[in-house]
Picture 1 (tube, helix red, strand yellow):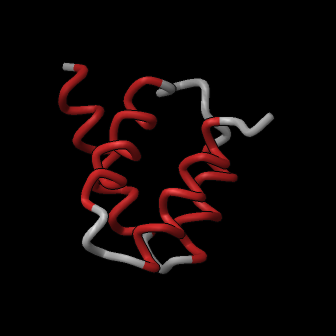
Picture 2 (cartoon, helix red, strand yellow; picture 1 turned 30 degrees about the vertical axis):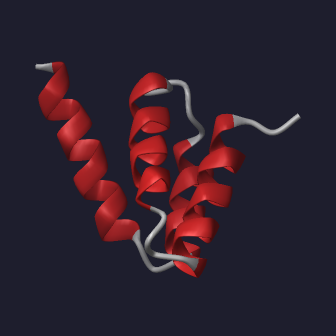
Amino acid sequence: MIGAEGLIGFKLQALANNPSRTRDIEDIRALLRAQHGKLNMAEVREYFALFDCVEWLDELLAQIDDDAC
C-alpha cells in the first residue's frame, strides 16, 4: 500500500513529465492540506528536492498555514 507521501511523489513525477497536468497540482495541495500534521515531511521534502521544487513546497505549506488561521 502506498502512503500519502508516495502518492505526492508520484504526482510530482507526473507533473514533471507533463506540466500541463494541472489536476496533479490541486491533488498535491489537497493531500498536503488533508494530511497536514500526519505526513512524514522529511520524505515529502525529499520528493520535492528530487524535482527541484522545494521552494514550491514551502509556498504550499505557507498557504496551508495561512488558511488554518
